[in-house]
Length: 201
Image (cartoon, rainbow, N blue to C red; front, side):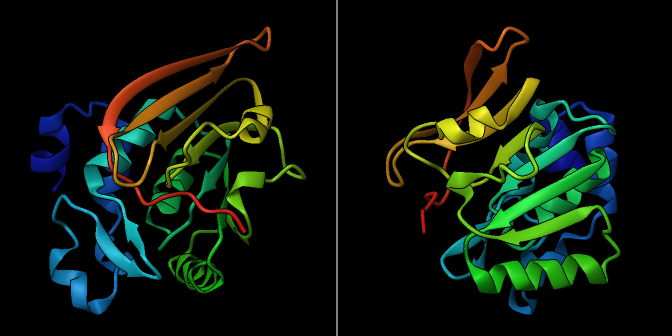
């Protein structure tokens, strides 16, 4: 998976490659999909949600330029796979899942696998987590139609956010948003993608 689906498509960050090589994606999908777990494609995880394809997980992780001191906010926990990758790159991950059953399943799974620097919250990702802000990095794994301003506000100075944006059945793109030291915002469109829509409570 790492060689064929990730390295050959341009991912170069050795930390990301090593971490993804060390995590068994089969542990984050249901038994009926374990044989497909290492294919480069999204898979259903129930409740109309999916686990992202490995290349997208690697691409988003690499483009956030996370270091071991960073506090990270993830919007859209899903099965917890991306959370696990982020936890190995950063100091602590706060992850929000709007679907209660998925949040409970991911929390239990991550605890069983020994991830002790991930806090799973059930709630509305559009609101972020103001009580824990600011965050050095924010990753959004579902697509809003526009960049949520409240999440930009929760970025630290010099902080970065990566998110897909666009209509569900239209062309979506990943965007990297950077909050400069003077508070100005830089936005860069980096990759066409397809994600499930970001929903509000």
